[in-house]
Amino acid sequence: MKISVIGASQRIGYRWFSLLLICVFLTVTGCSRKNSTMEQQLQGEWKEEGEGFYVIFSENHLGTVDFKNQKQPFAWTILADGRIQVTDPAQQVFYLKFSDNKLYVEGTKSVLSRIK
Image (tube, rainbow, N blue to C red; front, side, top):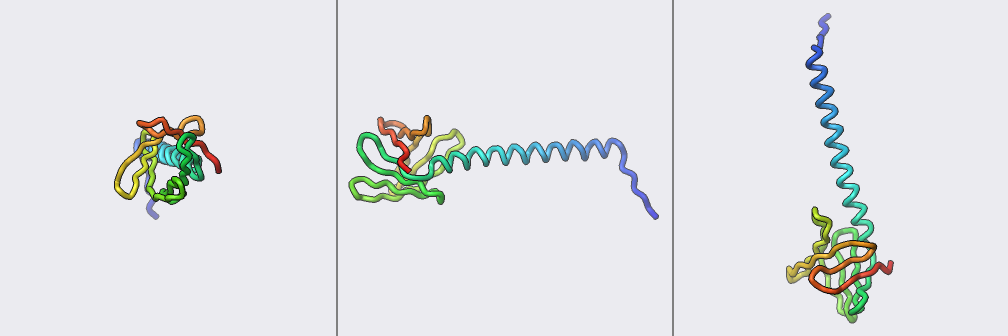
């Protein structure tokens, strides 16, 4: 019968490695949870307060702008800095900032409020 003995330094190495894996796992799950929460808050219907157009953010990272019954599709994603990048079919890019339960369109005075 062969018994293998793990040395004390090797056991300490395994413990540090296990601790490192746990830290990495917690960091990854924490980051993805924050992002999904923002995605969940973003999904739904929004109305622009001045122009009166409607925006729908779907869970599949696609959306629709409805302005005077003219519907325009777009794709959206959440950037690392927390801004929302919206790209229309003509590859024009807009940036939104989510704050106080409102969406602010950067470079304009447009503010969107959730309706559903």
